Image (cartoon, rainbow over all chains, first blue to last red; front, side):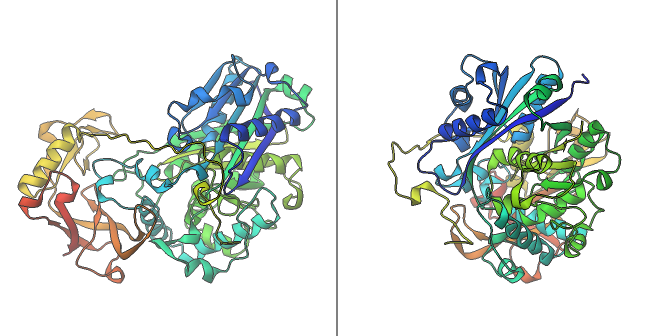
Length: 387
Length: 160
């Protein structure tokens, strides 16, 4: 079980708010083609197995797993679908190699949310049918409750949440994969149309279409295939109760993130995350989530994230750059593909291929994804360019 | 539209549309053994019940059939009347309808802590600005004739 596993190929497609040309399967084909080229031009016949992450309701096709193989070159190959965030898919692909079952595994995820006419109804249908749904409220009320309680518990402020939006949308300007880059002021965010106050329109990341495919390989294969392997040092995931009435530490906490990170750090041999992690790409589906997740991931003490943000610690030039890519607020929200998007941005940084958003001297990065409203599921991954 | 806002639905663009998918599925849910009894007490007696796990001393509200922490089954004797008052754990002012449109009048939705559990419900008889975390509230039940055996048998929670 000591086999080391690396990301050897990265490909993506789309990253736009609507796509009336490519179907989602064509979008995945494009991302897969780029990924296999990136891995030295491997033909999918040489790939042992494939893991796709998806959600039937978002794809608009029942039993969507059956529609996975062709666009990945996986016809007549072992294929598996994970109904969850794509970092859970990455974990599954990783395990296939770690157990020695496979040597080269591709993993994919996509979002084509622009096909949906009412995303709100899909999210609302994910809430408890007996106790929550009969209230007939917009599902983001859960984010409003979480935000208000998080601000109360942590003594963080509304302004600090708005500052996350200002930072991430500004960072997105320099990232060619980001769509929501903007110079936005604190006042713009605070005075924006309220959705579920204190949560406003600009505290919520905008929808995005896109597909991402990553290729993973065992140490032996990775060293043959690429001179820039990105090692998966640790991964962990956890799910809190789905019941809003019994979340382990109340509605203001992200306990799932804490547990996921603890497992990932342990596997990666990380004892002091603040000292050993150079930068982080973490979930910012909603503005407050970045602060809440930073604290849960032990990047700072509880209630400190807002103050450190104000001091500039999480800026690209700060002590711990956070979401230099623009995050979901700046890039756009890719639904179950969010996790792989975080890994994509982290891996490009570690390869030194992040272009204008490239950080200097980075060796270890953290990627963290949350599965969104109304879930309490998070996955953390530690990546490094050092074996 | 432009820098701050984008078109995010294909339906708002012009393109060849090979078909429109709609999924006319209907689900008829049961509330479960514990849920059935919880709603019956709500409807018939205007009472809120929880179930108490003796092992970890957690009182679940709404009542459950099992303790998710100890993984123990909760029995008939574990049912407790937890009263009809609680404390606001968090609240939010909802401005959008389920369709994503602006509401004419926003609604106050709260997580109300009762014993060790929480009920999610509307707040009434108070203004947005008056609500605060820690505020004591009580359930306002609908008239008996209007109750249907569901969470909406409580009309809203109001300040004590």
